[in-house]
Image (cartoon, rainbow, N blue to C red; front, side, top):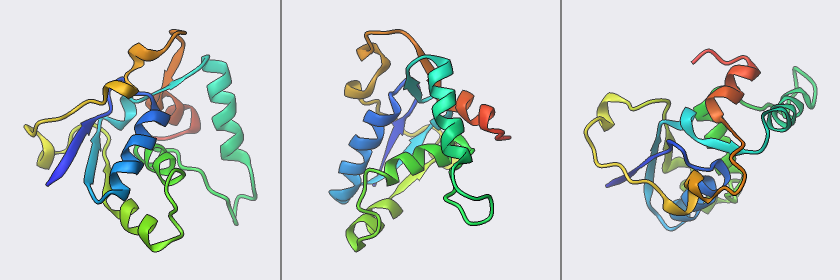
Length: 140
């Protein structure tokens, strides 16, 4: 049975660490509305940070950084897993991330993670993952 998590209004880093821990424990997880997850901080600082990640390395040889919001969330989760080891590879395969809500998950019960909700922010400044991916040039 797959756990469906609604990413709307959840902090990206906290969401990723909780999902990585659950995946390592053997749970299958699907994250919907990935473009509505948030990154805390001022818009200028967040976008300059992600613009720097995109431009590092050579264009042909990488390292590559994703543009699409579902790929950004998945890459963040991968960073919190030991993905070069067999346990991390298996855990990463159990994580699915979607933009919006796909037809096969429509109508399923979705949970939200209270520890990762934006209510925990002291500073109300944040940027959605969708806005970051549009800044990077995504067409989703």
